[in-house]
Length: 224
Ligand SMILES: NC(=O)c1ccc[n+]([C@@H]2O[C@H](COP(=O)([O-])OP(=O)(O)OC[C@H]3O[C@@H](n4cnc5c(N)ncnc54)[C@H](O)[C@@H]3O)[C@@H](O)[C@H]2O)c1
Image (cartoon, rainbow, N blue to C red; front, side, top):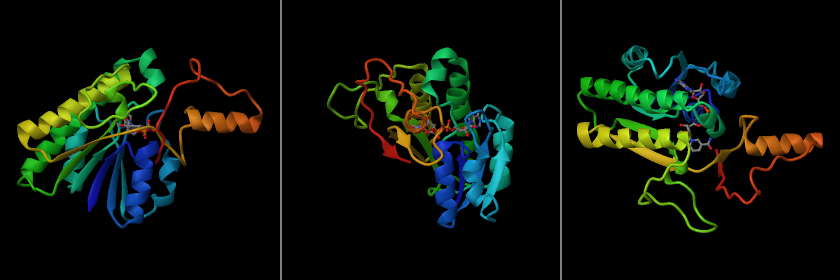
């Protein structure tokens, strides 16, 4: 397949890019290269004939249309987002622009391309979202697809908004979509500000380990 991966220079997107290329798929990596990006993350596949890079911003609809027309993907995996929850508290505007408006632009570009190709049934628009759209669990319990949305941060609210757009583009226009809500990822190439790298790096340097609140927060870690 030819997969258009957005946010492929980020943490999870780059893992997707490396895995897809290693399995023989063609990958187009669409990324604006924000502070969260690191092209080193895709260095292992950068020279592969299966790999192409497009520096573009999902807030720019014309750039997206041109990329769909140029590459004609079989599927989209949409990971590009403002993803750092702490930053969404200091500056929520960028989260609305990229996560809500950017996803809208991606849906419109994908829909226009898919309709132009005769609405192929095999096409997929996979939107990567977060379990944070479901809010907070107590000490026990679990989320399911039936859990009501209850986002608490500007980040999770912007992701929840984008999820609703993805659902609506399926219900209204028939766009074949997949929507996933994974929990916290960890693993190779993790951004050094994030909890697990911070704890490891501080521990190696003999520095104190930072704790948020009273340290009783629970996370469900998923290997990237
Ligand atoms: N990291 C996690 O634990 C986690 C958990 C659940 C869901 N998610 C979701 O998975 C996706 C990827 O997360 P991540 O941790 O790899 O994020 P990340 O911040 O490491 O990477 C995001 C990538 O998107 C790019 N990007 C940001 N704004 C852009 C824009 N306007 N146009 C084009 N590219 C842009 C960045 O340059 C970066 O390369 C996100 O949608 C996030 O909401 C992440």
